[in-house]
Amino acid sequence: MTLRLAAKAWHLLVCCALLAVGMARAEPQATVAVLLSETGRPHLEVLEALRTELGRAPGANIVLVNGQEPVPKGTALIVTVGVSATETVARMGAPAPVLAILIPKASFENLSAQVYGREHQKLSAVFLDLPPRRQLALLHQAFPERKRVALLVGSASEPQAAAFSAAAQELGMSLLSAPVHAESEIYPALQRLLPEADLLLALPDPSVYNSRTIQDILLTSYRFRVPLVGFSPAYVKAGALLALYSTPTRIGSQAADMARSFLAGRPLPLPQYARDFDVGTNPHVARSLGIGVEPENTLRDRLRQSEHLP
Image (cartoon, rainbow, N blue to C red; front, side, top):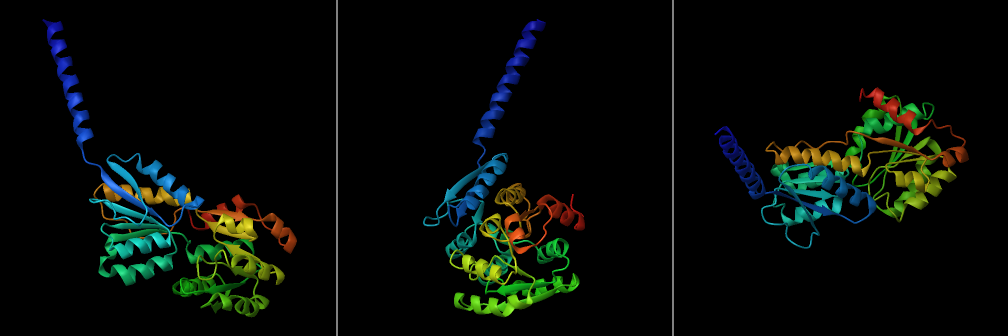
């Protein structure tokens, strides 16, 4: 009798387990539509991080869309990678809340104000650039004797100029800036700024720093023996002395955390800078310019300690 009851109990447990599996499979998945601005390595690294991290979230279904077709019906969240993808979704009318990543803070705020207006609560971001104070603090720590920092300010970076000025004043540095409204104005602006500058800080403003202009900017800064500080490893490889950046993988993972929180029923998190960052250096450029540069990990760890980061 005991064996017969045990067999019935086991059969009941198996049936319940199969029913639970069937219910889980029948549970609808939340669609996350991802749009890429391009298919270069950084954007693909972000996509891979999203797929890896969101793949752990129950009920999340990632769909890659190309921007030429409508976003899938019933999409819960749209993730845009880069400025042009975010602009594309804005033109569509944003049929779902949007999480923009690999987008400069100024570009994001401009889109938010012009396109989304009062619907800003349906829009968030992980910015491409890092906080102005963090950028200047790195320069202050790495090159304490170099206090005069030059900025080329284009249309996309103009809203950040005041924040850089305030951070420079706080750190005892001087900010030398010049407006640039067209690529033809870049070289004259450099000729005015560089004789008085110790460093040239590049901002992720595509109207100033792009594939057409970067080599001429690097050559001009090198001619004046004023090192360029970039915002990505690619700039260090191209000839910048130093760069402060967050990797696409880290940005993608942070965006996935925000998406998971939203899919779990919480409000879309507020726009934010990347939590973590790295420092890259170019020892060859440092030797050519006769500038001493500490190891990358030393610079990164010191900056993290100054911000009381774990």
